[in-house]
View 1: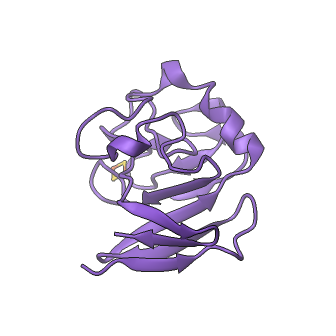
View 2: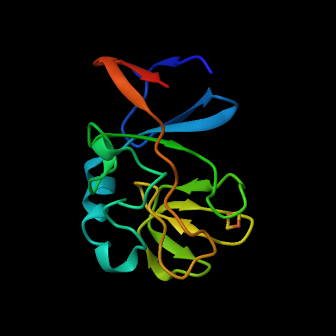
Length: 147
Ligand code: FES
């Protein structure tokens, strides 16, 4: 499929937009400092905290924030269990399966898999892997090319 250019100039901190690439939803989340701060707290709770499993994360995104620029998360919004689209929950709170101390991220409505603000899946969830990071790069400060 053709690469898709996305203008991110109007995305506010804490906001997410969805692009379409190869028929898949690609989420572009502008993470706040608070969202980023949650990532380093979760290492022991995650299946693959540095995203080293093959097939889901390009080498250049095998880091804690799973991205090129920590502020911008770009990932395919399709659950690695059976392909539902998780919903976002951008505030801390209670969730099924996570108790009362979930820091926020994504929750799959189909079988309850929970992911953090980098799309990393928590342990003991139906989803086996982190949400995929697609190939992408920054054309300039306000445009991303996906694909
Ligand atoms: Fe997401 Fe099953 S499809 S948890």
